[in-house]
Length: 120
Image (cartoon, rainbow, N blue to C red; front, top):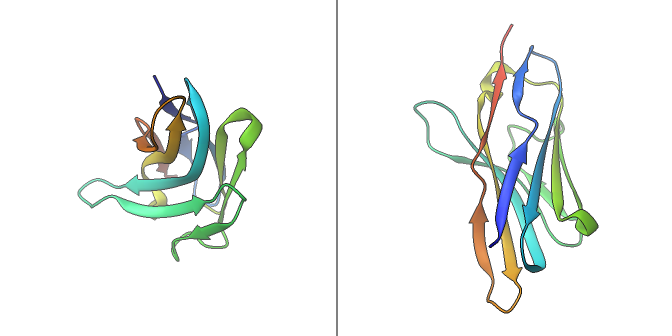
């Protein structure tokens, strides 16, 4: 059974940094693109960042130049480095991934989410 597990969320002051991790586990043949979305209270879930297998990235305008998405393919893990955090970055952050399980077809997976709170 394939799972995505996020970690690294927490409370940080404005201007601070956090690094989120997204670890995929289980019987995995390959992982294609990975992504991060976030959902603030009372708002719709929104795209944050995406990374391809080869490491190409794209970001939402609201986080560009502040967030960096990287991945370690050997560890099946993605990382979202978040710098210069603002109160408006407060949200539950969800990891996504296109994963091909062993002896199965590609599926789209979501993690359970990790809370990020930016407040003084």
